[in-house]
Image (cartoon, rainbow, N blue to C red; front, top):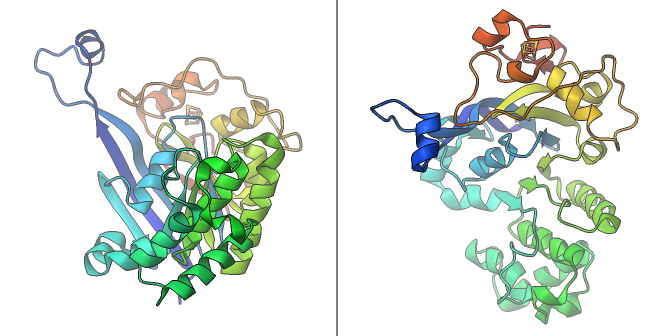
Length: 331
Ligand code: SF4
């Protein structure tokens, strides 16, 4: 059996844009208007092995959340391929959609909006079990809900309460229990702690690590806080304007960041105090619009090392050390 659980090849997700009169003229001044798209993901490839915690990091709007949502099927991909256990997801979904949906779950950033406020905890956790016919009767269902609540650190006696009767951290525990209810192998966790109080973030992270070991889970962990990424992940990919610019083992990326954007990302987050920074890089300017991305290297308008070549050619992601890939002409 291959170790690869999820493989993404040249994945693209474009969203059509509707612009107002003046914005339309600015972005698209041609007399004959062509359709415009936000290229949220523009050719992303990576592989996640069983048991991995694969982190996707980058600034807001870089495409990391869209990548997670496209993999779980919340968005329809524009191009490329997603493989689950070595088979194209499109084929898996045609043959056995229930199996993929049971096996792949998502935890969202905001536990206040991701849980239906009109459902009791018991309903929230038992609903996926019933949908996927994983319990034979009411007694087993109740036992499974109680067991999951215990495993995420909640008292089973609270199963008749509503989400608003819990704190933010407890709600995220309910969301995790709901995701685990289908006995998934793969979970996409989209900034699962960033909406929570700082004092309880570590508890939820530790819980996710314990559950990974207990249930043999594989995570795609989407985050912008690099100290969290370093703590929880064993692989890291850095995204910029819908593309991966650097990828490798988390320790290697943090000890030896190569791409100028990765270096600036590390410098801008003071909590990452142990990261080795061989070269101090300062960038100016805003992230360009994904509606009208720059030609060549997407980072060239902000990169202090940009050359004429960077303005015309797009650097491919190439392996510069075992398992360490960078998309930059400097390497
Ligand atoms: Fe900078 Fe050029 Fe490397 Fe892009 S390819 S990061 S512009 S040096």
